[in-house]
Length: 65
Image (cartoon, rainbow, N blue to C red; front, side):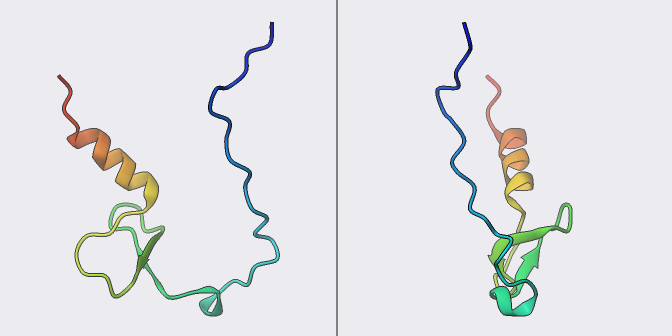
């Protein structure tokens, strides 16, 4: 019997036609961990992480017991 995922991944939007470069949106801050762009503007104070590094940090700081 084929296995089905109870939580299918949402449809990914086609971003091939979107503009790239500075005109695509506000300047985004770089992740302090890996250097990838984040979802936060460059003007945001404090430590900013990309979604992957935020998730990894949450896993490290979560209670293990």
